[in-house]
Length: 194
Image 1 (tube, rainbow, N blue to C red):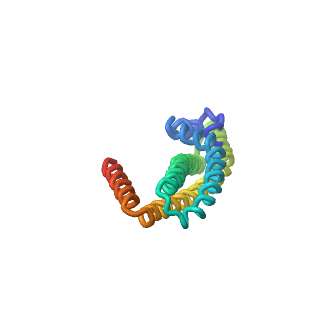
Image 2: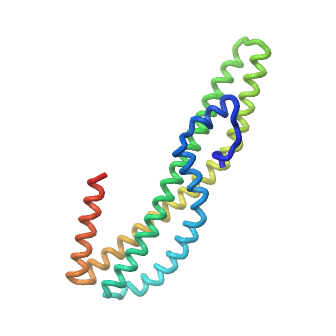
Image 3: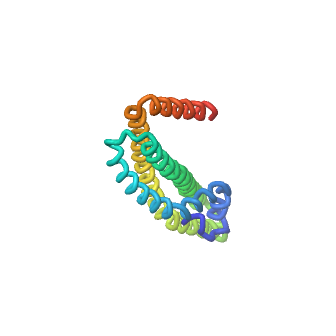
């Protein structure tokens, strides 16, 4: 992963140094938590799907509320991890873009008449940038694929949670409608607060 690359010299080192600590932390969190959250999602998905079959016919308010809460929690975890993945992809994209721009700048310098020693230095910088790109590009592709998987999974979990929430509203009488209305009011207030 790019946040582990020990480049500390020249333009490649400057590009790496420009990454904020927050971005590095998000990337580390993504790498550390991804496998755990994926396992948790799989376990919860299987459990929730079993309960969803029961819930399709259930009018038990407490049971449906518990299934909704479980679904909401796992969707929220997936969404947090998705944000970390998006941050890691954006940072990796910035690294690749900065390396490409710097390499183009160095190649323009090489087109001019410069002393041989400066030419060697510039060629070494270009070589380091090529190395940086070669090390970061596979990580970028992996992160992007993982992010896309989490985006799809988050959408699926959100749709599932919404369906459970609507089942509570539709099947659990006045108590279910009140619970639904209160939940929607809390969600609107949270969105309005920022």
